[in-house]
Image (cartoon, rainbow, N blue to C red; front, side, top):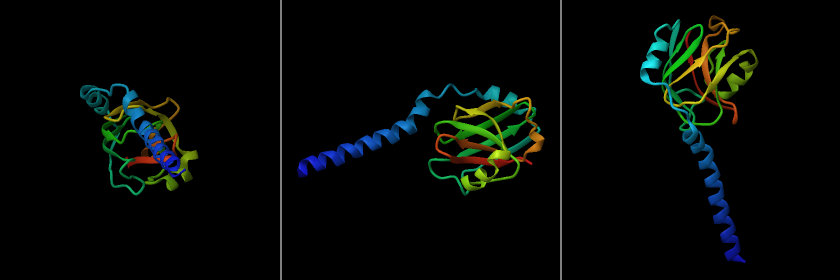
Length: 156
């Protein structure tokens, strides 16, 4: 009886660890190739705005963070830096600066979802034609699957 309980607990624990590792590692294993430095530099040259993702934001932690420079122009948003890997990242433009989940959820309906972020060492995301970047002040990375704040930067 005791042996069966020990086996259940240890095997169950390993199942949980494996599941968590799978969620964390799958985006890394399936990540497409990030844009090269030349493409990132070319895309950021025509930036209307620039800002920095910082690791020290209130809503960031050791699993949810971003750092580097983000450049915003009328048709592209470019990030030169790194993001903590994770699933289902979305890029948003937000009408005011936020630095955690609670603040973002209050403004999510008035924010513009720009597109998917699939690379963690720099990205270029096209801005939809119906979005005016001048209507917003902040660019934000959000994990849609888990409702987790990753990072944000105020660009104006």
